[in-house]
Length: 276
Image (tube, rainbow, N blue to C red):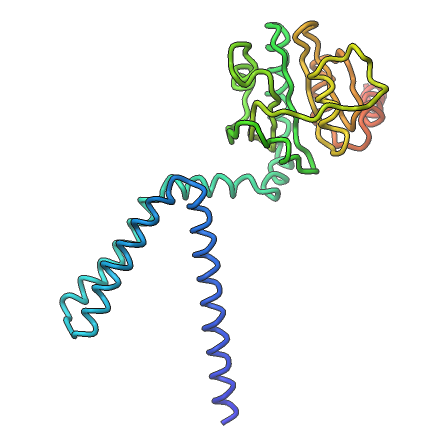
């Protein structure tokens, strides 16, 4: 008797676990579709699946209509395949978001992805400087800066130098805002950043430079600025601004781990000189 009761209890726990997992997966899928263009399609899909096929299947089983029951069963199988086809764009978007998780970003940095990103940003800043385009690029590192994307235009585009240059072209609607970079992707453009209120900053400092300083005061992000007036490149880290840097210096800062801005960079330069 005890063995039978334990078996029934385990079966009940397994059944409850399966129901909970199925409910969570269904809820997550519906919530995701509500944020995409697939929400309207989902309503029609549910009506078709529940009212027509499920209703037909139940009626066929209840009345003992074997042939109709067979058709309904096969229809449900085909419906599952149709689900993948109908919501292919939404499923693809979900996989893109999955690929931008924090764990995969860390793995990308460990396999040289950050070096490629640094090279693309350096090339973009050099081109913008030559053409006199004002530029503000904020690169997320360990501390998330998702709040900076609010009010901007979401992009989720693979980062490249030509794309960055085109975003800061003077006649484009996004050229006055900041570009936010996460991992190897541009997540938003045209973003408005908080301006630094540091009284120690020079009064002649422009809006882009103040925004770069303000965006890095409370996190470990690195902000790169190209001045529209002087065509010079500056970098802000931890609220500290370094003016008129070379492409090599910019590349070095983009690759360095944040441990205190100028001190770390100076140590790296000294180490390079000793090694030489």
